Length: 109
Image (cartoon, rainbow, N blue to C red; front, top):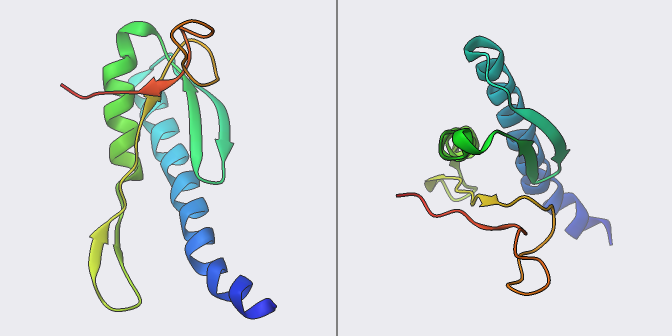
C-alpha cells in the first residue's frame, strides 16, 4: 500500500538531497580552485566524477567529506552519513580478467 512508500519517502529523498548538495559543494570548490574535474552523473544515491589521475586522492577525500552529513534519526540518535568511494578507468565493476580497469573500492592511506 501507500503507507510503506510514504514511510520510505523521507529517508530516500534525504539521500537524494544529500547527494545533490554534495555535487553542488564539489562544483563550487572546483570553480574556486580551478580543478579540471567533470561531473558525469548525479544519480539518486551516487555521483560520478572524471578527474585527472593526479587528483584522485583529493577528489576521493573531498567527495567523501561532501557526503558526510550529520543527521538525527527518528529516535533522536545522532549519526553521520557515511559513503564509500570507488575509482576506475571504466564505469563498470572491476574484474581481474574481463575488466581490470573497472571500478573498485578506493582505500585511503
